[in-house]
Length: 477
Image (cartoon, rainbow, N blue to C red; front, side):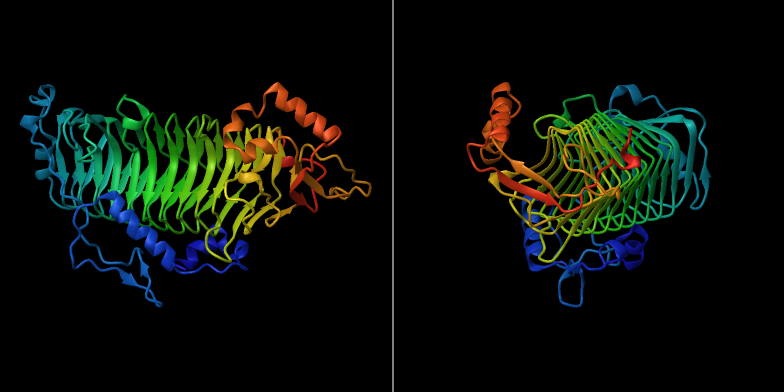
């Protein structure tokens, strides 16, 4: 376990006290090795070393030594950038004239990039300074520790994915990056091997192009202990974290993008009190352990792949007190939890007016615990791919709006269990191509007739042994 203090602070100590969280096993190491090959990263020095854990597994933690695995970055000179910025004063000269530890408050106006900061300074634009990159390469590089960027507009990066053209590259630790306006950029803020930074209250938008051709609004790569807070992200592609542990994503707002937040090969991140609206996917976890997702509103994740929260071979996570509404799929789970004996706790969430509230793609896989959730107005509450069931998971104390039992002793718990059966609607679970017809009038009629007088044996999907009789007060809207 990497960081016991943070785990206790976020609620893991109590919620996972019966769960054994294992150090990264051989299967994860194999997946990681494959990912290196697929990513086609730049050649890595033969001397690259990872911190070894007690059992010999690699631990990509914040205490590991910094190694130069970032591909070389070439900044295009000002003379080769768009003509519109040739006559602007170069911002680099102001940076060069500021001593280490100094404060730079430039005059309001337009300035030309590129800019490289390689010493600890404070730059405060007061919201009246624009740095234009002239549509080439990266605009601003922060290659220092303990610096502050505040009140700047950074705009006009290049459009090359090969060189990861960005508005702002961060390659240092303990920096403050706040109150920036970042627009007309391929990538917004790109942190690589950068730890303990605060990225707060920034407005980030990509270039005006097709969704798949945009860059990521915020990207973390091998970056630990960062706080990403109160940012407004819109019309970009993804916010993504690769191999990045112990980060906090809090009070951010993301709209009209692809992945609101995408984790790959991470551990122990917190996603708290964010608002994700009108994106293809809310929070997606791939090969990731120990994530807490709580107090978020995720809505209108629509389309063929629309999903509020997704798991792919991930384990030991907590999904708690979230509003998941008007999404194609609320929670999608594929081979999760992945590690033997691990658990995913899903508690106190509201699933309302979704196409499918919970979708299991990998059959009856144990380890998921659903307690205290509200299922309201969904077309399908729980579905299992391949015609399987979810009876090996824990279902206890949830509210189901179609529960038909009674509460004679007025204790708030239904007198009989809630049983969810698959009737004719099992067809689209067993045959994905039939999902197109899931809510067609004919399918609805067949489903009604089967419930009235079954001509085939229905399948029990799940049983909640103590269903709530009344909708929880906090779920009433």
